[in-house]
Amino acid sequence: MNTNDVLQVAAYAGRIILENGGETYRVEETIKRICSSLGVKHTDSFVTPTGIMISVSDETNTISCIKRIYIRTVNLEKVSMVNDLSRKVSSESLTLEEVKESLYYIDTFTSYNNSTILIFSGLAAAFFALLFGGTLNDFIVSLITGIIVKFVTIYLNKIKTNDFFVNAIGGAISALIAAFSISINFGNNIDTIIIGSIMILVPGISITNAIRDTIAGDLVSGIARAVESIFIAVAIAIGTGTILKLWSLAFGGLF
Image (tube, rainbow, N blue to C red; front, top):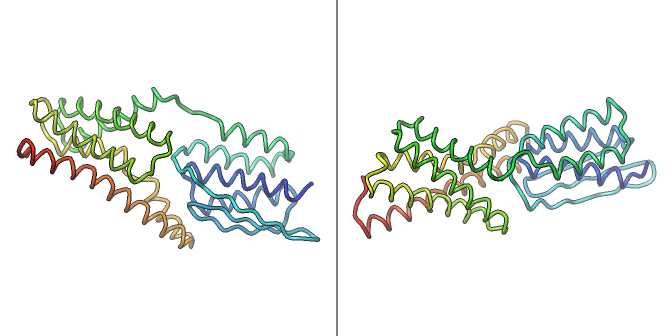
């Protein structure tokens, strides 16, 4: 079996995991398992949130591969599917072509359409509003806000907008709709509406992975993910705070 082909397949599997919210240690573990199962016994990898570096050796030479990661989202189903596939490679003796086909299917697999994502994003925001003590009116406003924020973030991600601005705009939209609902005497608690709406932007996976990577000894990845989480939180705060300040200056206080 061609060592370079095995290397490319292992890198492909690692890229899918990393792009969809998987931890760096899981990427390294998957790469090593796939290479070992397909006949490459000497494998080393170094993974960060934005890149994968792999080196494999056989009896005659050493081959290296670098994969740059540009897209980072959250789809834990894909992470689970690649994880299962890496185990099947060894337990069921899958061929290299079968692994390639399976990885391509996972990479192009779509769990839910945009309509479903929008609906459940709105429901998540709405129930968070209730969780933080909101009223039925706050629930309705947060439901609408969550749908709008998710729609905008999907569009901005589609045109490859910087994540900082995506989250800042999302926070701004949340504050703007909340302020408007209060001004027309429909919403009851502006803080509850905003908190519920921005919860769908909060980087929960990044924070969790930062802690897990640090505990696992991947200090570079852990620190990088922690810094990323801080910047996302700052972006949300900037977007929300800017709108509230401008509204206050233009129309008076809301609290």
